[in-house]
Length: 252
Length: 306
Image (cartoon, rainbow over all chains, first blue to last red; front, side):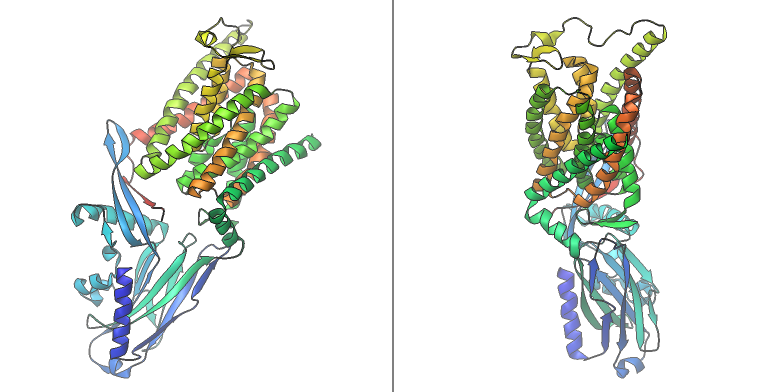
């Protein structure tokens, strides 16, 4: 949450200082998960408005970062104890994004120095939890790396250097993949305009991912009336069991 | 072909899961076991979160047991009184099991405890059953009268107090063994997402000496109620039952279970026990392998409940 606030604040400050340097939007600002949802792509697009920025010296770069709702994630490490592999140590990553995608016009390391990237948490190496249960950051680091690795495999974290393309000297767009098993909640899409390794403008747009229709109703049912939900599941099971027995007796 | 699961919060290939449910249901109808000991590991392997896999499997077991039990009921192969005694103790067991499940999940050791208890249970029971069924098979091949599992003299169980008469099973025994067996199966059901048939069937045959033709129907009867209780308790305590996933698995499962019961009617008892023993040992060996061989990636992640 901390970095989102910083980013929003920066965006507003930058916006106040150099009004409408950058405008950005999304192809859709709400993703509705229905029963046949198998993942989708959204497009973040925008334009650089201020011609003073355009004509000033130094290369221009756009970075688009999408962060899912924060979650507490426990990373455990298996170790061999008396010949058996068991979870021996665990580190809780508090408030780490459940989804993270960053696209840029060039490799991030070529756009800005590491200090700057770290401040905005841009890049898979720099995604950090707010805090961990490990005694020192050095102890937590291999656990954080394991988490990033797992998220990459699940398609929930990704980094795409070259994922932002310029359609004209001022117009740009980036495709953001949203896989099938994304967590629900509020996402933030942040667009940064870099010049000479510094953020000159930034804009933040919320994106909502939510279940709708039957899925939504079932989810609410399970959480609001869990006892009735459990009974319903059992009744469904018993009815299907009985029905099959009846049908098969007719057949044979 | 893809369908989104509202509780697991992921989309799955429904036809594949329908087939998995059917295959497990077939085995469950054939052997009179719930099949949860196969389904839970299969779902986890598919990528369903382990909490959802355990809780949802219990409802699949309810359905396939229901289907199987009705078939046995029509063959008059159910001891209602014995079933009732074990059901009551089993439901108490599920309460304890769901509580333990929560503790283990917090400690991060659920996976280990589940695997280790599977290995011990499956290994012991599988070995006992395999030995017994091989002896019977060998004896019948020599043309001898197979020594009946029941025809042995009194064991220590007959020394216990609180005797009760179970007429359908032609037994006059202490109520303590069925109560303990029922309770244990209840605990296992909640922790492992199983019905416990693979514990129940051998325990009833070898310890309580229930006639083999009564065992299947009676154990299925108890399993229906124990797994129903597990499903409800999991729904209430950790919201891990996915009704859409349950529907897919059950639809396949009940069809498979009916076919399995018909298959079982054509096979001989000792052959059935031999193949169940082989299946039980194979699953146990696979889980032991997982505990002993170094994992490809020692790290695992789990999202904490908010």
